[in-house]
Length: 298
Image: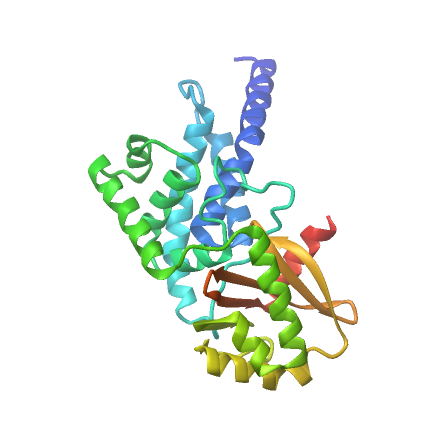
């Protein structure tokens, strides 16, 4: 093979990879819940793609998806051990979906912060099976090949994931109602009004603050309407004065970016049902917050 042939082959490989890249990132991010780790996985897939004998590969996107999913599963298994020692609640790393609402997928499934948080409770193989089926509409047989298991087992993996989500999460409200609930909550939180807070929170609401041990966030979840309301009311005089709120999109839903003197302090996302706000998710860890803010500027 001549040098020209080598260059042509690499050019085509590059085009194939660039075309598949949004889907590869979407798979890795959903499995890992981390944009930073997903980027590392995509980079590793690119390095492996360059070194692969591509002569007999007729479907580059399928090959790359397989490599990416397996790399993500392996990393998720080690990440699970690391997250057991994470200081305080762990929340997924937020991503800006304003330019790619489905994040490389056929459907915007397994992208919402609350869903990613709940998927973290599944083992990585269950998570990958669910993601490939629900977000990317892969046939069960193809998922079985990627996961190196049987089609019957693949169906069981996806079924278990669906049941887990159905048991843990109520039907979400419409985007318009979601935004309205978040607006009402922010107004109530800033004033510290117990009555107004209780009106917008569900009975068994949970507030998670992911500070990673770096900021003064609560290191345990606050559970239940009375406790969450009182916590937020006590929190209000120290947190809200001098802050600015910017409406943004995070993981396909409206979110509030809270800053003080131009410095981001928290990204607030909520999970809401017809009963009210079910989960408050405060991303305060700078290692997660700063890349998200940078992506908004970009």
